[in-house]
Image 1 (tube, helix red, strand yellow):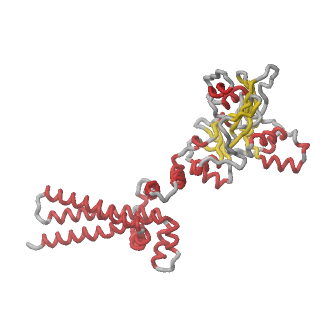
Image 2 (spheres, rainbow, N blue to C red):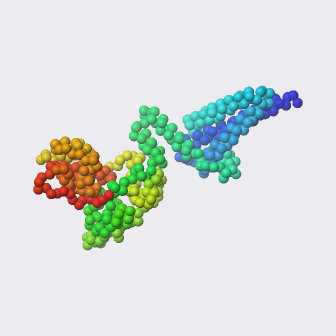
Image 3 (cartoon, rainbow, N blue to C red):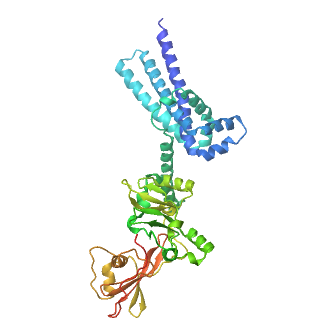
Length: 429
């Protein structure tokens, strides 16, 4: 009987080692599968071999396989720690020595042997790690099926995948071979899930809309002047939304029926609007608009009122930056056209605009030249909109960008007989 404690200690130590080996394999599999990605797994699965068949079975439920591997690894770590503690206890050491040695050994094995080393190797050589761990992933998934309904919370794979991508972006930032534009693109894609629709929408105050009852001829004029291809039609207010008028619907109807329909109201051609909450993530918005083949949606706030509108281009700009067309061009900051007329950018500060004409211009409500024009006419300015402001005639010359915002203005001194204070161009946003 004197040799039995030593034999028991050896058996327990052997059990700890036997538990550590599959834990190491499963840990490598956890890191290798997200790093390789679904496309990489598909490449391995198409090979007609036992490995290809195993990888194909992993592909059937990637998240489930990796989640089961995580649960199984934790269980094996627990078994190894308990077996190691009991093995030290059989050696006759004091209890506090046993706890210290077992605790220190368990931490070193858990962090270094089970997690750091195999995962580092798996990230460098994901294909080799999947070859080794594929069988273990399938076994872990099969053994976890009876207890899977009891698991709480979501699978850790999405978070781990996002973490892997962020680590990759950090490595991109440290690499001189990756262009800054490419790094910014990846960061933008990763940030879509954290960006809400309210951050990318066109606010209610900047929307161009058509009042209900507007005839087709005036609607076509607004389409041509604004540069938009879709405009909301509203009743008494923006919250009283009638529908969305599409330029192509108007042109097709007018081409078929002839110009005699120009006096008809636009209501007969509007399409039902699509509504989205302003708290919706932008990545979900992109998927929904793609599946519904919709390019525009009305954004509603928590009280059900219209907060703005969003287009698929608004969401794409979060990834690739501002979208412009071939008509957009950059120009000088301020250009003297002669005869006392200047071409100025719409964002020129009010005080600098006054300095051009030796005037002291101040306004507590607006900061830019375009703001002065919008305030004077009481609506969003379009190309050709004009008003007299503090002795200056300000005319919107050119719009730019996908949102068709005023880019440049023509400014001259007002003459005494010049009564062109404003026009009726544009519609209220």
